[in-house]
Length: 233
Image (cartoon, helix red, strand yellow):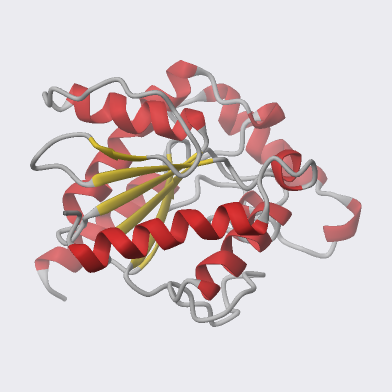
């Protein structure tokens, strides 16, 4: 095993064993014990969820946090809930995923040139991690960005992911602007930094109300492809 693989494996081990936030530890484990009736036969993951995808990828997707009965159940980002169904269908259509469905860890899904992460790795009550809990988790995202040696584009799913991605680069000492969040917005946040693309989060609240449509989401991935093809020029 090469050093880079060891670094990735060490990061994943650190994420999965993390117990920094007592409220989130208690909640994720309670959900895993009590389960949802539809998933009573499942053994829930019930731990922090590591990133997933192509470690040589040029695109990083940053979400908010695992869903209580989605990634907290399956152990993989955006897997097993409606948000994941919407996301992976779009990634498949854009050529970033090998299939349009993400159901469980052994379903054969592979990501191409893309890695998926989040600002918070534990399922939070009401899908709302506290600012201090996000702050505890951001070092894991920082490490992923460091290890993604070919990173050129970051896609932030939702305003919280958008704001905290910018905050992370500020904490690293970069003079990052404070742009307004706009769906399908493309931002050059620094000459030596990846491009940042914003999207509404593919939550059920957004997709079922029409705030985020399939066409609107496809526009985001078209812009990502354009940035990769043209080199961001």
